[in-house]
Length: 425
Image 1 (tube, rainbow, N blue to C red):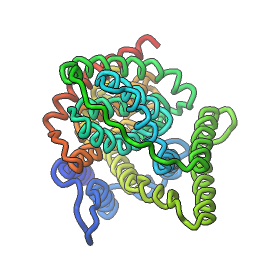
Image 2 (tube, one colour):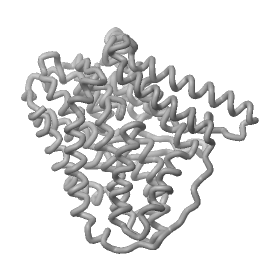
Image 3 (tube, rainbow, N blue to C red):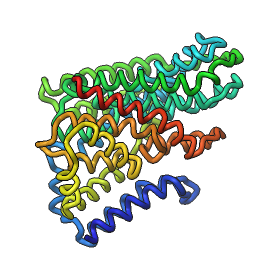
Image 4 (cartoon, rainbow, N blue to C red):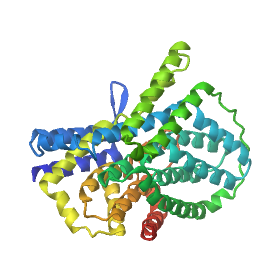
């Protein structure tokens, strides 16, 4: 019982940290609090013998749902995406696209939505949000238009299309690994829900912001950034090659984490040699590694420890035995759980609730919810926490209440349509 109490207190403190004190300053440097609280909670569970070290060792050496392999896979894919951002590819595409839309806000709105959706599929929702949010804030300010429609559309698009591929979100990887779903099987089942979720969310967004988008904007010409063509080509080759090999990984007998790690390591080595040859004129390698989501490592590992505690306390088995096995039950309950404890802890928890006897569609329902849950409140995903922090930096007023107001209107019909589509696959 003590383990259950410690776990509950840890989760409650993580939620409070997100809402009240997302960062603290230590020696002049801002540090996120969510992972520190999770780490302290996990350490407390181990020190109080609430969870056995043998169980933790088993979890970290398992063939499937191995947290180390999952972290390597996701961070490696993120490194490939961040590198292309550092080279300037995303900013170049955004500025070049904006030049084509002239004075029509509708063209700009839909253009950005489809551009962000496309880029999210092959990169990462977090990277797209971190990259495009500053650009949208800057562009809308100079065009003297309301930034909210574009920012909300960006956030919704990134967290909808992130569920299209298994590598789009760490939650996809967690849950697919728990059910031993390979890349191609995942894509076959998730293509239609993603498409219908996108159509639904875009329709709702259009209705919400129709009045605002009717207003004309000032033409704002911005100079295209210079790109290092060599590093751009190298980055694209690595990203495309990695995506292709991951797609056929189950057919060539290679684990996905090995493929992604190999490509990320290759990119770092090649770009480092280039930097040295150019006398470090282009410090893209260092900046890429600096921006990578290393905070996920202590956070995810800590959440695995908490879940193992819940397993030993019998809490996970109790939920599993009392949760009806259908797409709507798993879908809505995981949306609720994600917005209480964040989508990564929710996915870790539900990966244990899902058993071999659970239907595959219930697993896909949980995957859908782990992505779209981010749209409903900032607590739903780390992307929401980062996004709200960025908006404050760029002096865009967007409260928790406004986030949740738009989030419920957009998120509920979107997740409902996506869940319903599983019934016809």
